[in-house]
Image 1: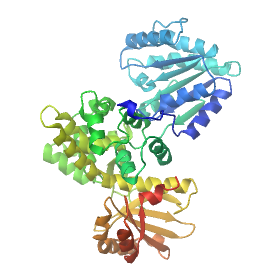
Image 2 (image 1 turned 90 degrees about the vertical axis):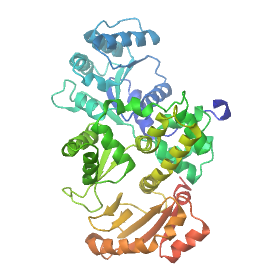
Image 3 (image 1 turned 45 degrees about the vertical axis):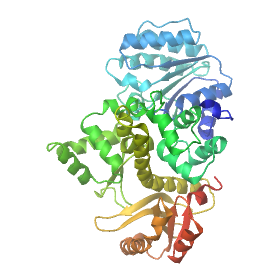
Length: 489
């Protein structure tokens, strides 16, 4: 179906990261660079684009397999052959490190992907061998024209290899680069190049893919980036050749069975849930599991960075009134809406499953809209664009009683607080204004830090009609929709 796309896929966004990489390469001296970011975020493409832009042609790319030392060396030799490198060939982990050092002296840039796998006990000795080579190269940095780039997606493990004081490679990096999600402006650039960038399509795709360029390219290559929701879901998730059908499983979920899986699914389907709610759900499934949920949450937060613990605006660091969300939109959408229908394709009618998945995704887009709006507020403020000027990250507010605000934006310099209610469907806002006013009143009673500030109420939705805009204004709210927030991005 790729033939349906008339315009060639390009390299989108990443100009800041690309500039930093090109500057490092331009120095023509030894460097040891860490590039970290979630799976499929575009780390390898970014490095490749920078190398091409700087005309570096002595390149060796290695991808470390999930294997033992013999398997790693065998895979490395295959990559040596692919890149036309015949000497020195590695025969074990020590000679692999020596070979990397020798090639760097000859002006090669060596990129080692999945570097975090050297954290495993069977492969860890490689880091000691590599330390010796890195130290020799650093001593001769001015004469060495090559460099080493290590890429990894499990941040805690690559961090342990390079940043723990006890690690052999501690303090050896010359540079580090974090590759985040594409910003909204870059996502819009993709949509404007290949389809109609409506507010509805932005919310649908961003709620699914967030800022992961590989997923947008998968949709482009299948010819469905601009297709109806049902067609896109069917082609990307429900056919035997769908590129994203096993993505979540291949990412982390195979490692996270049992209660990890239970906890993740519950949070995905109940965004903003509390520790008590997660414990109650775990006990309802398995009576003895509730005691250990805190430990699972900690691993999911700190090691895998799959779950985020949120506190309300103005909360103290010790505040226990926390809520939990899945960090990654794709993982949340998969667990909340797609996993069960996609697993049932051999047992139920396909159209029925796709319709069910789409309905579940539409429900999940309510939370997705709140996250998208907060991201847009921050991006616009960071770029100095028109609109609300932030001095603090956008958050919501809730307490243990009956007060909840979807969006709290602060401008401390001008003493303005903006309080927002978000609804995916504009018609639902009209039924919510009285309740929203009550929440705002209780918030202002309790939020002493904004006493005396100007208060702006805002009614946010995917797309306002003239009627819903007028209704918002009558309720004393600023009407705002995604078109307003993306118009000049």
